[in-house]
Length: 121
Image (cartoon, rainbow, N blue to C red; front, side, top):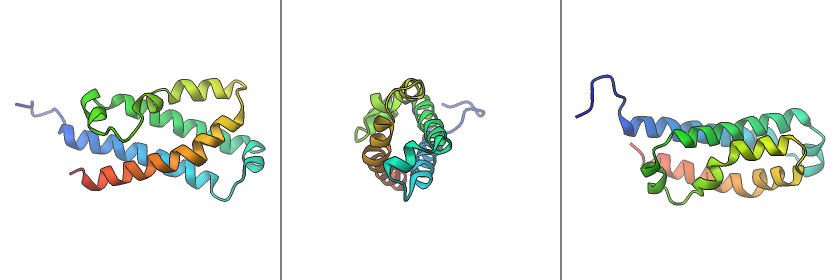
């Protein structure tokens, strides 16, 4: 039995997934209409993207391992590594890696998050 002050684990999972969805959507909104040249010349957008990728990784880490395992469509190891990845990218690793993540990987993750939220009470 849960203690009265313990949050509902399903609600908590939903909140975390919504936070990840919001971060992913912000990234796509910030980069909408950009090409790589525009992105690589815009440090503000790069910083906003890094911040939200970092946020996704931190929130993913707050999910219980069993919750992550139940959502096997997402590459959790990659998502959990985002804070470290963007820190290293910030210190000079190629912008191409970040751009590839934003343009190829993130849209898929966002679809999976949206579909999961539709099924989550």
